[in-house]
Length: 399
Ligand SMILES: Nc1nc2c(ncn2[C@@H]2O[C@H](COP(=O)(O)OP(=O)(O)OP(=O)(O)O)[C@@H](O)[C@H]2O)c(=O)[nH]1
Ligand SMILES: *[C@@H]1O[C@H](CO)[C@@H](O)[C@H](O)[C@H]1NC(C)=O
Image (cartoon, rainbow, N blue to C red; front, side):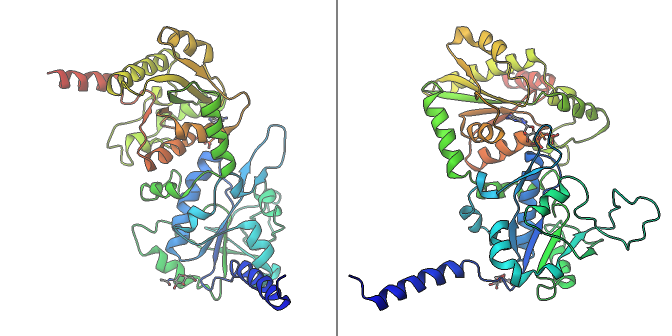
């Protein structure tokens, strides 16, 4: 039997190591609400916030993901680690789950009487529009998902701080130093932002941080099992078809902009690879079938050993299973989709496909593209490059 003293010693060591994991960071913390958009937007913002926390040398508090369900008035918050591992992020910078921070450190680091919300400038309250008697305020918990988000961890704010004209571009200026001078960690242990301290779409410099965002075991296993058990043996092509009614409306903005949502991922951040056109946002069914067939032919020519056996379709609305199945029937290629809507499993599977065709405008597609870039997996976009340009390039090659 173990000597009792040794036993007590072992227990103590265990407790102390567990506690050490939650030692207070003298350089302070940074937290924010992913209050804009759905997953693709939040992921873009996450990468920027991670870079920002690193530049300020503050521990990033990993916020839960904010989700919206049909018919529900309040957003749902899903713990960060439901979808992604914490460990690979630690290779890049110090992070802590919001639940751990709140239960293990907040009482000491961020007592309820000292919680200040940060916003660029005053945000008007939804309730009191006219003759607002209050002092200027961030109203950090006003509306959905603002209120439900902070409520998830029982966070209320006692004061507001307007940080303008500071901003978040730490790559092109001495911005980080300005933040540290204005808000030193001993006086401001936690910077809590009403929105992400990051730009949308993700800044070019922060795209590569995606490699630290790795799927949780649950999603890794689920994706592997789907690929192994449901898809036929052989290579498969992943497709993202973004075509719901909200998307049709979003695409109308093509007319009056240089860029839309994630479009810099194909057009370049300065439009160095072209300008917006409507097929980029909403390719026709014919164009989709044509491009898919062409991609399969190319793959068969260039990689004859790894034959394409199936196509996996992810979509928010119309998966086009019947059209695609008919189009590929003579090629002995089957077409698949998940039996139930699962945006995260869709993403995890698309990340693993041998080839991927996504929507250049969609930040959901952009997530897949970045993940695949981190592994050097090939990706393409619907209707890109523009058909006319492609024909010219082809003629050029043939000449
Ligand atoms: N299951 C599933 N859901 C999808 C798919 N594409 C889009 N969605 C849903 O639609 C949401 C789209 O919002 P974002 O993730 O922000 O991406 P986006 O395509 O840039 O769209 P907007 O930001 O709404 O303009 C996703 O988060 C998903 O919930 C898909 O292929 N499969
Ligand atoms: C950054 O913060 C960590 C942890 O608080 C600290 O050990 C390190 O010295 C800091 N780095 C700089 C450059 O200040």
